[in-house]
Amino acid sequence: MRAPFIVIEGLDRSGKTTQTSLLHTRLEAEGIQAKLMKFPDRTTVIGQMIDSYLRSDSELDDHVIHLLFSANRWELASYITQLLEAGTPIICDRYAFSGIAFSASKGIPSSTPSPKLPYEWCRSPDIGLPAPDLVLFLDIAPERAKLRGGYGEERYEKEELQARVRGIFQRLGSEMQNETQRPVRPNWVTVDAGRERKVVANEVWSLVEPLVINRIDDPVAKLWS
Ligand code: 2DT
Picture 1 (cartoon, protein in one colour):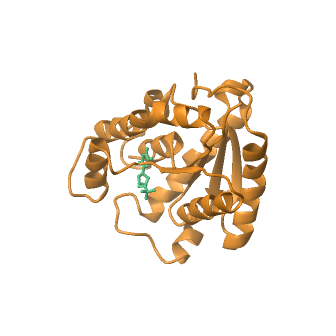
Picture 2 (picture 1 turned 60 degrees about the vertical axis):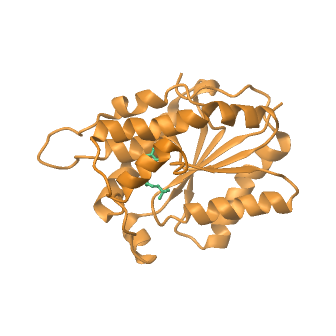
């Protein structure tokens, strides 16, 4: 038996970071010590390069930044597995799904007929990472998200891009639901994040609680392999 690996994904302004921290607090209140993680992890050397890129302090080729985001996950891959095997649940704010959704959104629609980075190419470097047991996709229409106070200053915080990112998240979710083999299929649940914070938090808790209570029988699976 081991602890579950739970990933929370979502668009900017979906309340993802708030929900991740509410979930962490609720677990603590229940006496469960979970590890909160976040990607990109801006504290590592690779993370600092990513941070500088996101703030537009540096320019990098699209392929390079994509691989750095993935490398930033690989830096922590064995630590993730160790924690789960030692019985510590992980709640993770963004993971490989953000990696694909944001990179594969670049360059569409535009004058170029195809995306700059094809979907399959974007998925490759993350194949074999520790697979989450549950992915909660906090879904909100970008027009609605924008009403929550506007996007921030960082590179990807633009409504048009967010709409494309949402489309790729939806594709990832439906592909994952259609796969039949358990080891490659994290359970993907779309949560309507347009609702009141408390309502969303309760739904998130109802999905997470059984996993932390019952724990997981299978060893940590490898993502998409
Ligand atoms: P935060 O606002 O959550 O710090 O994210 N991103 C994230 C990618 O493009 N690829 C990735 O692999 C990950 C994890 C999403 C900062 C931005 O980084 C994007 C928003």
